[in-house]
Length: 311
Ligand code: ASP
Image 1 (cartoon, rainbow, N blue to C red):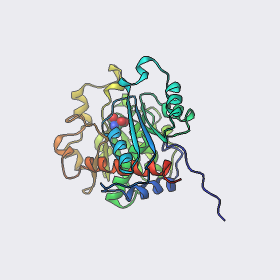
Image 2: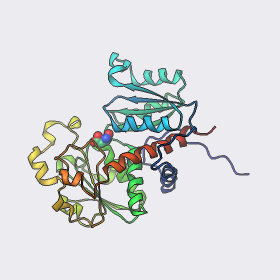
Image 3: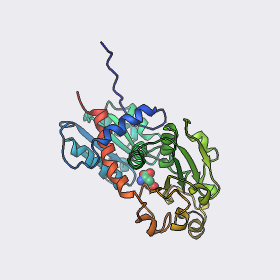
Image 4: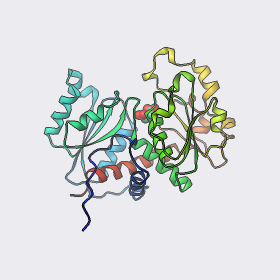
């Protein structure tokens, strides 16, 4: 008789996940790609969306994912919650826990907040983006999109361009892609690049290297992932002027030509139109931005099923 595999309680970060863990989630998500029908695997379950930082696509995506599996979804937003009355995160977690939800999806401006919630509830906690730390379901949906196009996640060259230092998307993606054996090249304004980028990921078979220009980063890339300039996390001194940013880091058609002909262009959204990339690139044939959004629902269905599905 084989021993039962203990069920994972939370999904807090990509760091620490193995290639097998990642592939298992992507394979499960693959079953839901393109699905719009309903299933009943989460009937009777309650999912609380605790979003204490603005979000459109991630919150809606979790809501649709849970709803398609038959769960009841409760949305809590910063402005309408007791957090504005000064309730601490621990008290919020304990209060929610007393109502016995099955999962709490947490978006928070501070790194580590979902882990704190996880310690104070028996519910499964999913990190939906915590400060500049991680955004695991974003990296998983990006991986599903890349794998859908290339049929693999190893041996690819992925350029990640923009506001690296503030980007939980960059961290989670760098961790996932190097774990899977792809090379990640970072590029952005010096002030927006972490000093020791290598220390932000555990390291896997893939390499993680900085590039000094967008041209160098994009050269020969299979995937070009552009990041939003995160004004809400910047002190004024951090950023070059918008004009300088655009002239040095905006992806336009000429820069994209340096990538492989079959290269895809990604962006986690929301796009600052005309800043990170020109409209012709954002809406062009190589852009998979809306495919990312669609895959987000499939990945979140798979994650919720993995954590709270079954008996
Ligand atoms: N939507 C992504 C996030 O929440 C990317 C961004 O906001 O720039 O991290």
